[in-house]
Image (cartoon, rainbow, N blue to C red; front, side, top):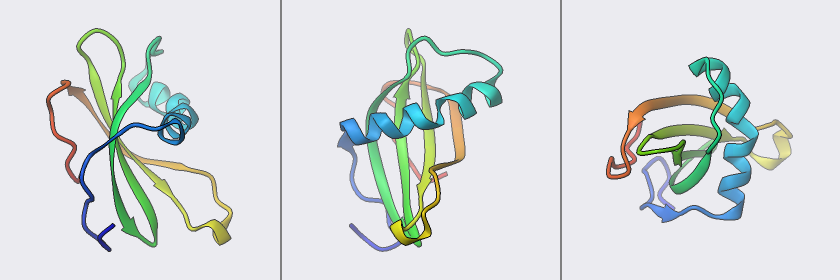
Length: 98
């Protein structure tokens, strides 16, 4: 993992899915709608003073969201935070820094 740079895309893991489940309500509130499907597909990481996770999430049909979720360092004992997200993405849109 590069300090400050984005690592290559990896398939989503159980941990990644747990993270998107944790921020799902925040995304639904910002979008003003409920998502029946909310499945992590792939992710990239960025090492900062913690870890930024850039996660591609399938939300039904051909719709995808890109989420940026921040996981603080363990000693800080903070919950995950949804920093930003992008809507209107497709399966083939590359995860990039945003």
